[in-house]
Image (cartoon, rainbow, N blue to C red; front, top):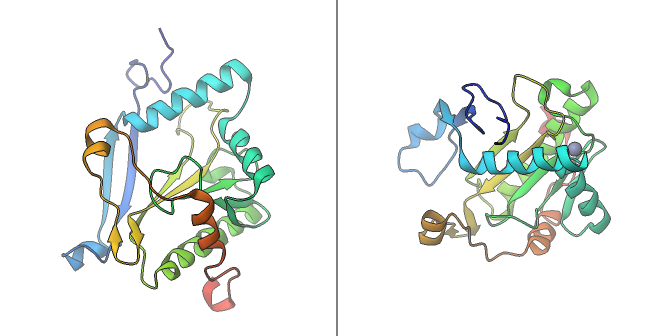
Length: 217
Ligand SMILES: [Zn+2]
């Protein structure tokens, strides 16, 4: 039997996730909701656990970090990377589920926000700001999206974990939304008719590519 990944109750793969959710979506009818924040508790989300099992297995069997491997491949290829600074890289993953999906990877193998150096914290703030501004400029209006920070569990040793951020925008063009429809809901398989290299090129040529003092606040 597999070892529990996090094992708070001993069941394989059992884990508890806390999400701080803040709405920012102009497509919601209730404008008040667009500024509301919620704290959510999620138990054993399937997608997260599947990824975690694969990451742990790869690390146990080959002593490799999945995301260091992906990052090395992306840096060698280059076509899906649209912005980077000294410590972080922004790219459109080849396995994207959403149109114009973006990931930000730490260049160094670190696992969580407390592991950041001062310089890395500044670079992370910069790249998040750049990505968010590019999204908002892509179609000329604020992009409704989900931003997921993925970091190691708070307890135990997790050397396989590589800190990264995923952005899931729900807009597929200037006037169309991405719907989670039958195939996604029924089979758990996402249909995405965009090409990562083309989406990266769109974001590469969308402003800004550097922040002004005013942008930095
Ligand atoms: Zn890594």
